[in-house]
Length: 357
Image (cartoon, rainbow, N blue to C red; front, side, top):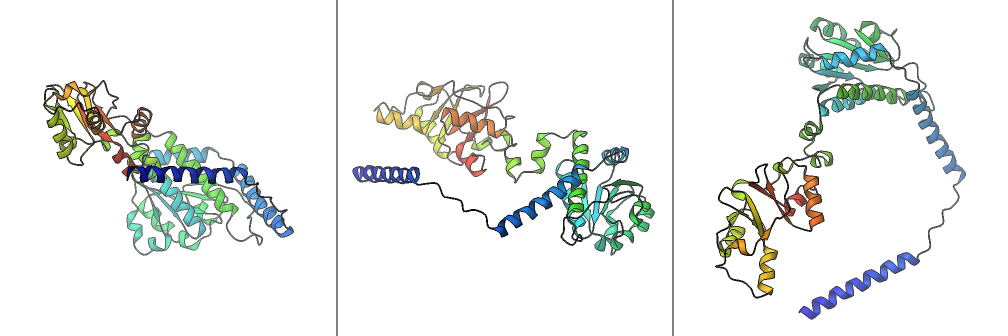
């Protein structure tokens, strides 16, 4: 069986090598000249990008933008974004950006607001209404009620002369932009400009709010960014799942701890009478003892443990702990606090399950 397994492994390596050689010898694909239609499509797509980028580049922010930022920073309630149609989708995105970066925010659909959802708005709120034309009926009919509620209204719109702008407490104008639509009708450039101003608001607020990586990770536990900001203490094995054994304990007790600890870690952390780390004993160490015919289960584990192992702190980020394990080529790493006590164990399987690796 051993010979067969080795032969299969060798065959697989040889096959992989042959495939790699064929890939190296393969000639690069020859790109065909673009057809006239392809050239026309590319030219139009680039024109759209150019039109939208020019519009964003021509945006001019003034003191009214700064005032809007200050209103959001000082808001005691929540920042309510609203808009209908394409600007409504932009409003949802801006609200999501604000919420994910430390500002309490919701999106309020104008049609639903007119049928009771205005109850979500309070006097302490700031309402940010998006409309290029400033003439969207669904938003305009909300304004009298919002005024009675007492919430501040910020309009992000084309200019300060339209109905929405005249009713708002503050206007951030994007200017009269040219839509990239062939008919000049579909919201394209205007929505790009609305989004750009909304992002500028959200990021200016974030820059002036005490909100760091830890808070960002708290709001993004399921995403890749959030996972990479997680701390060791959030994933380490602690309590009953932390495989601790005293230095004076026999080897057989260390093996029993490794076997009986929940999750069956492949290591036991060796500590002194005060719980301070002295070393680590792994299943790899046990296998090496067996291979060398040096197994004596009555020996104290301290005589066969690995001394001065690599360690991490509970407050370290998991990505740093993963780097330590990768560089040291180890599957487990003890977690120690400032006084050297072994408070947990980080296992490579936990990192894989959390998709850190």
